[in-house]
Image (cartoon, rainbow, N blue to C red; front, side, top):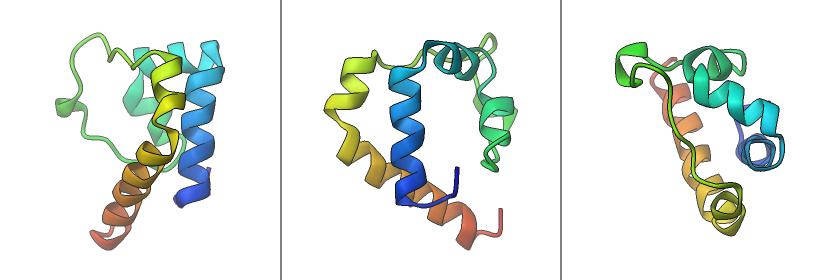
Length: 81
């Protein structure tokens, strides 16, 4: 996934539609996002992983959350991450 708006949208669609990937992301967000080139400080992740919104909620907010995630990608690029 490229760190751009299209990549953000594809990522969110995969999280919403791929149960195995969703489970992997919930149990190991640092490693899963790291595979995509997104750095996450482990101290900001709760022990045991995270709980993602239900798939319908992700899809209902797809455009809004795509924009927000794209902003995160750009902030990491500008900070040299």
